[in-house]
Length: 466
Ligand code: AMP
Ligand code: ZN
Image 1 (cartoon, rainbow, N blue to C red):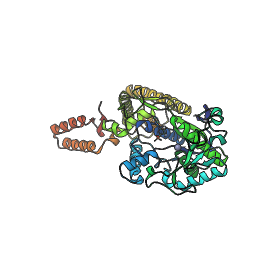
Image 2 (spheres, rainbow, N blue to C red):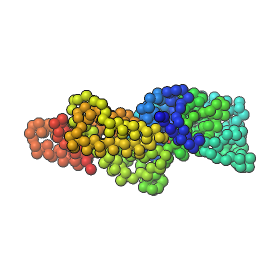
Image 3 (spheres, helix red, strand yellow):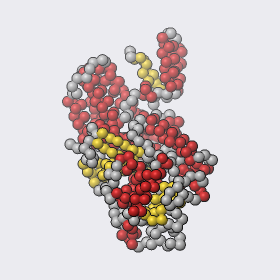
Image 4 (cartoon, helix red, strand yellow):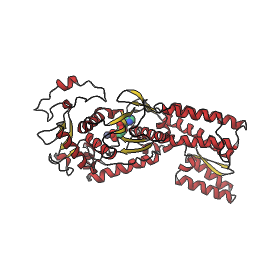
């Protein structure tokens, strides 16, 4: 049995076989740090997290690089509007990005190279493109890639470039480019760039967006690596251009597999500031949802299906998690301190199903179906008193194992905010002192904060209230 993934390059499911057996080198396009990430962006990082977690679960040693685009038109413009240096401005959004990842339980990549720290590598790559006669300089000092000189241009996006390549010459009076499809490798400095710029053999300027990813991926992963990911909007022109630059310079295949997540839309329409349906993680936390609930929502839809984000969906995520928490707690109570025995057959069948489904291009809907089937069967046996302590412990371990992939099972108790935990402790103290009225008052306070507390022989137990 092996893992199959959908390769955008071939538009087919292919068995996943990395270049070096057992070791996966992956590159994922990261954020442009000029704003807080919206839930759509977070969906992309969540897909990549699920993919990396599953590769690790399947025994691969994974090395992941994610870039931070900290210089482009938007970052420069916004920094100037706020009167901040580019670095000071982007640092705020770099910090916010890492905070989002932490709240969502997205495991960190191995490297987060920032574009501004890799300008020499980009200049060197552009020089190689000149040596291969794939780059040219325009009058204003910018440098472009010539798609007409790279016959494979269009292979990822499956574009037929014939018409474009031979037909549309650009009027030299109006454009600096030889061809409409040519893209900038290096942008000559202009007034709008203020103090942002680097010296290069072509004069002062800054790199184009695409060259950043080619240079940084190859610096950390080698000229050929296994996996390159991003959202579908990255396929063209960004990833197409990365291929042209990288393969044009090295003459070697760039990435073996290209995987792209479908978009997230909001209540049926595109997310946009003007429609007022643009949500950041902060917005959702402010509405009382937890990172874990957002994570569940983003993880639970297959990455190649459009995800329609709704508040109803978040409420459903909350309910699904409550069901999982309750089952897990029943298993713990039944297992008590007994060690895990053999996994009962009915659970082993679900275990196989989980892996089969995930092996099929990360079919998470199928994997979650196996998970909830396990919960139903387990609950039935628990109700009938037919699950032994050792079996309950084994099923509990299976859930923990699956959670290495899903990352959604951390019980609510561990993620309650400090003020909630402080109230829980105060209530326990009141009960200890037999101040029942005070304890009840705090219980109501907690309910108003969105948490219900239940007293068990193991101590107070917190749950998100509906
Ligand atoms: P950006 O910061 O715009 O470069 O985007 C970061 C990542 O988010 C890229 O992988 C994009 O393809 C992805 N992305 C952007 N918008 C959406 C969306 N609405 N749904 C899913 N992924 C998206
Ligand atoms: Zn990129």
